[in-house]
Image 1: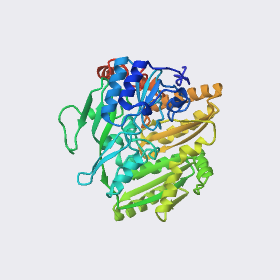
Image 2 (image 1 turned 120 degrees about the vertical axis):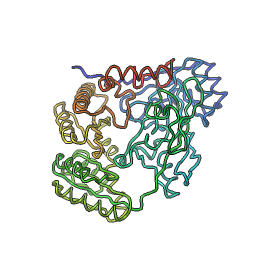
Image 3 (image 1 turned 45 degrees about the horizontal axis):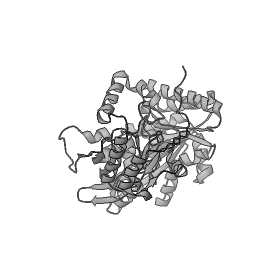
Image 4 (image 1 turned 120 degrees about the horizontal axis):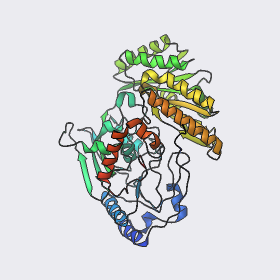
Length: 473
């Protein structure tokens, strides 16, 4: 079967009509509106490889009212709208559409309130994720979701993509921390969903409809998120394995022992070698799997869980288990996983970071299948990810200028996604559907569920102006 093709690389030059530009200038002024072709280039792509479309214009609102006014002007002109934060997405979700107006919310970056009594924070959509976590830490609190791009990604983008992160096994994903949203609809109406109450079942849970909607249903402008007390202690360990099966067995045994670590991540041999070459953190390059294990909480519980996890890893065949001596070494060990994408990206001109999730008991099988598929198609692939929750990131090291090699990448990816679905997995665990994964969405959802999603899209965006071409054609 011929695999679905990755969206074509393209660049479109478009000039929006003068009346719309005049209306936008009246809202934000000429200094926050970009129309020159060269100025638009940085807004024609996101973190997804090999997908580029130049927008018609980019506007930088500072308030929800300005967003609503821009949306009304674009809707009246029938111009597509693509919302964007820092542009770190990995499924093409914030790539512009031809003739589109890009609403960049990066300047709406204020943290509006930290309510330490109620354990909440209110922030504009453009607030950087790490800044949110740092603001919480000043009050002895923690914002748990920690996507790999948290140093530059924005909270609005995290909500729109329902981002995960290294701490997802214990703490969950972005959806688990969203209490309320402010959203601008396709016609410019400003709506608010959810509340600051821990328990609130009034009406449909519409905020959950917008979490993970990838900008196709509305534009998220403000969020109210839940915080948790910062753990009093933490311990970080690395376990080294000679087989991926042993590492996967260790993960299963840890969970079976009723231990839920804060972090349970892995790197395969290719990735570990790249990370060591890049970051010099002391990783061995001759083992098949490196497992990063981290526990946090009460000091006594942390000590007990760390001891038990080390014993379980050893019983499952770990060659060595290293424990960080202090916070500095713990940060150094954790950087081995956080630097994985950057390290792999140094090998070839194009790095395609993919995202599939399978049941935990199929992890070893899936990692082996990915390696076999890469070899069969003569491709370089490094695999790492969140072993504790079954989320894998097979990363293709390639060159988008080589058409023959890119064709092999398409075929290999189709085989990997198809295998993922065969074992009961999902086509994306945290990156979203966007442009990159939409060819497989119907295959996972089935016809009726897929069409129901399209009906929701039509109900909220009848003209199809919000992030067109994403998730659906």
